[in-house]
Length: 305
Ligand code: AMP
Picture (cartoon, rainbow, N blue to C red):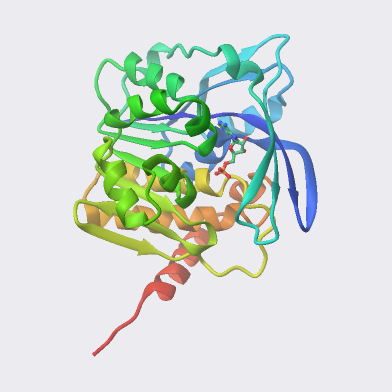
């Protein structure tokens, strides 16, 4: 009943109006695995790093129960590096540097134990690599969730569109939804994108929450108003991790349960932004997750008689 997570394991340099963090641990895969581990404990990580990546970070994920056999370490090469600068609104950001390094020539080979998985989380990665992972699985997982970003839309749109028919749920942010669909209205964009393949679409809107589209149904979860946001990096990945973690734990892919998954994704994303890097995701306990979930439900509840 494993959950296979593909995603970058990386170094990030992050600048916000409130401070700068140099070469901290990041990567979509890192955030997804930490976030999902709050809900599900049979996770297998697939990624590639150079010999510059700290062993202690890999050990921390192993100690958390994440199988790291599929993380390839390339001797003499450098890990993926990304640098970004957030604007004053702490939502929009400019990518300053994307050094693919080990990603440039990466062709994943799934370890034997990774071939029989029930859930697949295709985290942000080159679409061609996401496709190679799908193609190596002898049987289709029960649920395939995919995340991607504007970077890949800019340089690999055709490859990206080739993966979409293979996924059940796509998670992207509002600007990416507009870029992918060519539509400004998110309702129209959601229709166009679902015609490309995924039956479910999640559009993330940063601190303004997230929307779930399926058939003619739409569900919305707000962002939790937080006193302080230190670093929004990885919020989208944490969201995806919490979302699929809950679905893997319950094995229920109904719209009603996807709505719950949207809440859990938002809960872990709200923790992610409270400290630089994945630090806070490592600290939270099941009790705090439960308490924050209740805060979310309170925020969403209204009775009108
Ligand atoms: P998010 O803030 O959820 O969009 O995710 C940010 C994380 O994605 C950072 O930790 C980066 O290392 C990673 N990242 C940035 N650009 C890319 C890319 N082009 N492909 C894969 N991962 C990326």
